Length: 81
Image (cartoon, rainbow, N blue to C red):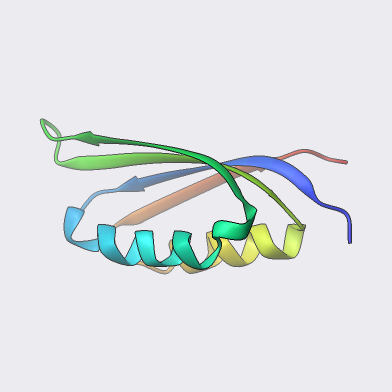
């Protein structure tokens, strides 16, 4: 199946959910190319950006699971081809 490259932006508004986010990211580590996480302590949030290379189904499954976690906001952008 054809893979696509994309970026997934994750904003965690309650840091207590960070372990669950990391658990899911580990589950999908095979499609993660790179990761950058910034804890913004002054605002009480964490921001993570993930570069992915996977099928649309894999990327959708990853973002879908992340989006179900309370106080976690997820957006993604992927290549068209």
